[in-house]
Image 1 (cartoon, rainbow, N blue to C red):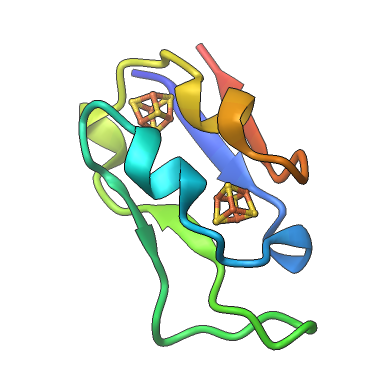
Image 2 (cartoon, rainbow, N blue to C red; image 1 turned 135 degrees about the vertical axis):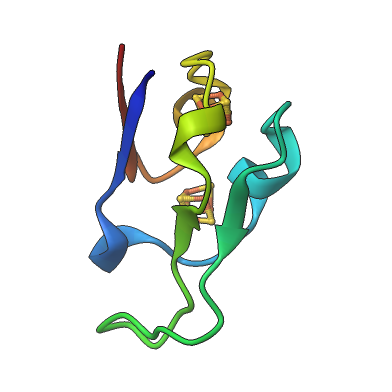
Length: 68
Ligand code: SF4
Ligand code: SF4
């Protein structure tokens, strides 16, 4: 199982990572606000992650790190 971490403070909630994930396990955390006032993205079913790193590649702000 891969491990995906988000530097939430850098996230602007653009949802590019949400749209690109082939497993549809990335979501915007609507109940959380970061210091910039954005709802950050996160993975909610990590056990389904295949470690493809599409999310990290897509993110324009280098928020996401994928470890296989
Ligand atoms: S590494 Fe791939 S499967 Fe895992 S959360 Fe990112 S886009 Fe989705
Ligand atoms: S692509 Fe990056 S900045 Fe956009 S929602 Fe995902 S983690 Fe946040």
